[in-house]
Length: 387
Image (cartoon, rainbow, N blue to C red):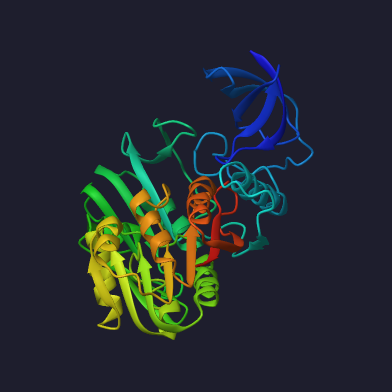
């Protein structure tokens, strides 16, 4: 066991302290805590540990709203006021841009708090534990049964309270269209008899159904478990920031386009838009949502950038958590578009890609931080580059 004074936060939300000069990442701890922790991984220069006893609580700690905090892995920071969470998120982004991005003074545009503190998620993904709805335990693949989710929108909280016995369901996704009022459940396995009536919403098997959401004046079909931003107010703000970043012109390219969130909003200011997406569900939604307004390329970003020309007035990228593939980053660096807007959900992969693009001659003008996942360490950023 080791005693650790926590003085920072890591990119994954863990508390950071030092013991004998060694950096220790402590799950479940926050800045200001003094804890007794057990080392679970030692890499010599750094280690990971888990809290076994809270010796002195941080002055930032408050009572969490949800009974599952500390057990369920969904909310890391419910014990901290949102304003403090936002400052820590800015510190995380700044730290990654310095250490991994090589920027001594990153051009941060401040933190925007978007949407409600609780009741904002329009999607929750559940597993089955002995027939009961369950999430993964914090830091583990182990399942833990739950009875509530305080960050889900009220309509989904209400559905969750009626789910009851899942029977042969192995996986359950509940989705809500905030602006449309639509609700739907998507199951892997077999829903129990009468589930649709008891839960009060349409129940679909796999990806055989869909619902709709409206963002920035556009209506989007979302099929099954296809990706869509889980905070609708946050999606609206991202569209505004991307539109402001790209401006207007002749040709816009949207890589990792999903169902068309940015191609169909920010892209409205361009004469032509090309949207690239590989996921079959998202491609089908993109074609439906676009209605012929944009050119749709159904291919991985690596394949598409190898085939497309580089004559773009603006490029938008919204890659998965791992960031840009090296081939895509190399293509963007070679093209040097006048404007590149990079939407990221992971400060570490963003920082890595910033270094690649800046080293290749592009200029990072600004990084906007959007706090649209309160009660968690997750954060969205919108970075703008000039070619």
